Length: 136
Image (cartoon, rainbow, N blue to C red; front, side, top):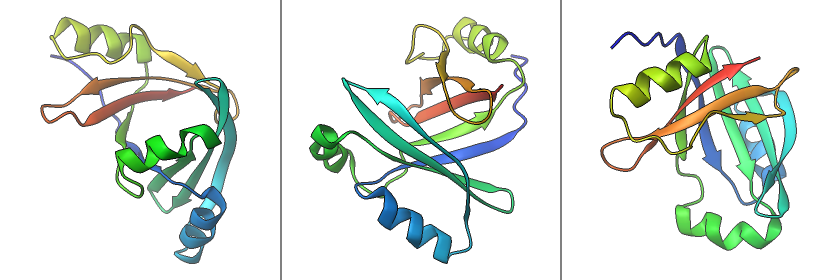
């Protein structure tokens, strides 16, 4: 299989209080490099990308009615690991053809960063989510 992965892009963490988590990670020297909202099951979630050196963390809070679901998934636990790719469509086709378990029917767009990003996830052998992401 010929799949080009550039680097680890970010690690996603679900949180229950975004502002509390922002302050915590800023105390550790992380700086906010992107802030956005996203639609989720009829509500609006919030996301922060924080960076320190080469490490980027995605902290996200689901809409208020979804907080109990976040707790079930485990607050403060890694939700996904994201890999940076140059061509999201090529990465999707390559992984699908290789028989990986695709978690989305196609790459999705999010209004993150300056011009947005496109991403999809695959399932790992123990159910972990591996995200492939192209910042546009």
